[in-house]
Image (cartoon, rainbow, N blue to C red; front, side, top):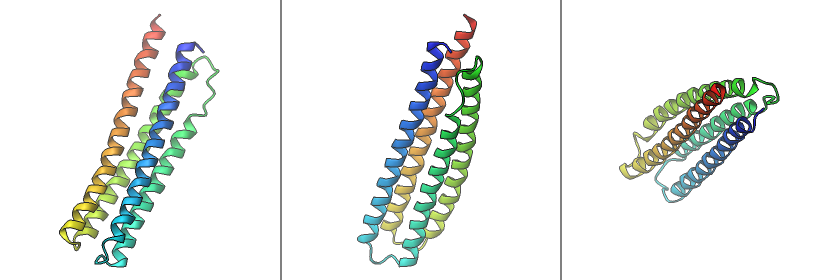
Length: 163
């Protein structure tokens, strides 16, 4: 495999690894903020708190599932002649499938948040909606970064094949 293609593959692997680290840290901070909010909101019934804890846990599990799916594609044998092109295609497809899953999880979680915040005081509802929106925005930013990396990698591979 040419040095350029090795660089593209390694770059994308590192970009994904770093992006998941960023999402993991954001998720952990969201969980800490949620618990801190609950510590200062005794008026919220314990059942409601547990629903939000479940929401957070499900989101974290969904992120971990996506991470495992993406990491599995990183183990393709890159020593074959056409491996870089095929690996990038397989990897991109896997990531896009993971994004579809993430979007479904986001939609389900948003519906759940809307249902569960209906009876909260206005201030509590605003905080939970802010946390949910922040998490969703970070996921969308992550998707954008990854899609741009794939576009760049595909462009470089196409240009390299022409020469």
